[in-house]
Image (cartoon, rainbow, N blue to C red; front, top):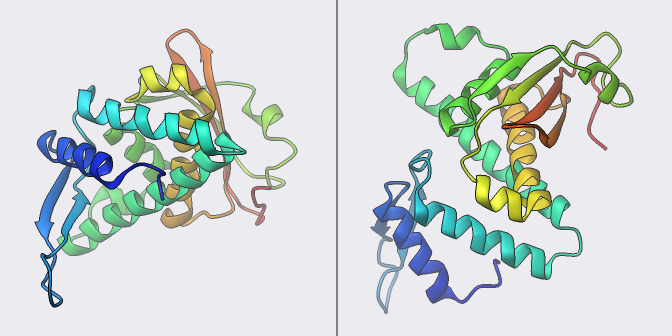
Length: 211
């Protein structure tokens, strides 16, 4: 799936386990042969973890070498990641079986809270988001813009902006989908100002969709 040798992938996964970003357990025995190892993400890795950054760089390099459309493939990967993370948030809340202020959040607020947990440190700003999203947003939909003042994968993003920033945009779109606004419109301007990227969001009030 990644184009990497399985031993290389296993080595990087073991590094994620050491970094506290994943767990490693043996699969149930299904007959002859040794049981396989199962890896599961357990949340956001430590910000700046060299193992996590190294894996991100390896995967970005592989996509850059093999993909006909690196940005689109990055967005597609981010969509799956965002959906998984949002489902985990929703499941954890359901398991808690208690009402919290988080239950009153809009899909956009839930997504921003997730980005904050991942280390992006979003800040609301006044911007030209309405003009940027004018061709895609639903009539009458609210438009908001946010500065992402930190990036957990800054080095990889500088080297492969189409891929890494595409993953982050896909993450936003996947999370919005699971949190309840699959028709929301979003766009990301990488390195749009010193020390920050700019995220633009418009809700899907009238059922608009991404192209």
